[in-house]
Every structure is written in structure tokens, then in C-alpha cells.
Image (cartoon, rainbow over all chains, first blue to last red; front, side, top):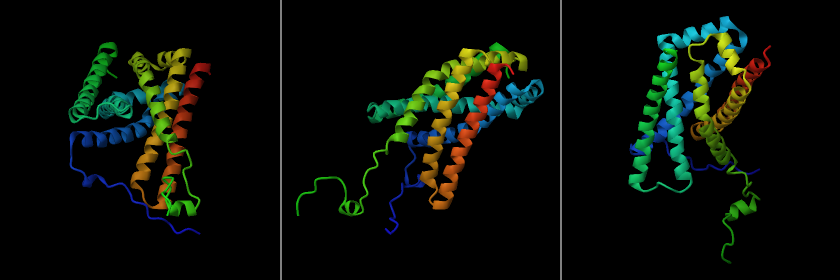
Length: 132
Length: 130
């Protein structure tokens, strides 16, 4: 039997100075967790569509309510932010954008693009269908 | 003493512990599914926007059409896989109790598989028009 090796663990959040890239890294994880549980809403919606008019009307009643709208709006932002923030990681994975000003620009870009795209999608949603 | 010819530590060598050569599998799959979803996101958003304001019959008709069903199934597979890996990384980062970690990782797998299969089943049902 080998003795259990106490391997070093990654330092926790409070160790780090709060910077923009660090905060966005936390937000990337937080939106990921939100999207994870948000898939329940997506699955519910698809199952309701497959079940029948009554079940679908229940989903529409929920997504049409104030709380439902807030959740779907939050979900839209979480999805689009996680998307553009994730595209940032593609740059870094490929070895680009590591200079201080490039890091900052990519991160601000992700933050602004995430919010802009969310607003854009909701403007289209209201134009097309008068809201959900 | 001869110069070390490998990155393995002497202790690791004695214990026959070395690289399993699978350390980057999850990293790669997370990127693979991320690229897949980046490509699929625009059609997926268009599909969701197409469904706004429609009743169940209208929604079912759109969701049951072949290209839309395929796009959604691909997106569901990529997202379920991506979120399984992502949540496992978070669990492994923050849960240090072995038992709780094991149970959490298992629950994560169950959740992702269940959500994916339930969603895919719904789409297949809509496509077959049953």
C-alpha cells in the first residue's frame, strides 16, 4: 500500500488581487453554472412541446411571467456572455492576446459584446413576437 | 549519480506511476464542444426566435422539421458534454472530501446524461409526429 500523497491544491479566490481578467474568469464559471441548471428550463420546454398544448401553455405562462422573463433574460445574457468570453479563451489557447493591453481589450470586448448581443436578441425577440 | 534523463521523479519511478497519456482528453473535448457550439449558436438562436409567440402546434411543427431537429440535437449533445466537463472541473477544484467528490462527480454525470437524453427524446418524438 502506498501512503496517500497530500498534493498541493490550487489557491482559492481570496488569494488573488481582484483584476478585470480575474473577475471575468469568475463570471465565466458563474455563468457556466447558471447555464448548467438552466438546461432544466430548456428540457422542460422541449418536453412540453412534445407532450401537448396543456403542458406547452404551462411553460408559456411561466416564461411570460415577470420572474420567468427575468430568468430567460438572465439566461440569454449568461449564454451569450459565456460564448464571447469563451471565444476569448480560444485566442489564449492559440497563444495570442497575452500582452497586458490585449488581455484587457479582449476582456472588455467580451463584457461589452455579451451585453450588446443580449439586448440585440431581445430587441429582435420583441420585434418578431412581441416578447415571450 | 547520473544526470536525470526524464521528468519523472525518483519516487514516481519506484512506484511505477507515470503519465497515463490521457491528461488532456477533457481539455480537448471541452474545446471541441465549445467550437461546435460556437458554430451552432446562430442557427439555434434563430430557431428559438422563430418559436416566439407560437402555440404548441406551431412550435411542434417547427421543432419537428428535419434540419431544425438535427441542429438542436447536435447542440444538445455538445452542450451536455461541455457542461459535464465544466462542472467536473469545478467539483474537483473545490470539493476536497473524497466521498463528497465521488458522489458529486457521479451526480454530475447523471444530471447531464438525463437532461441530454430527455431533450433528445422530446425532439425525436416531435420529429416522428407521434
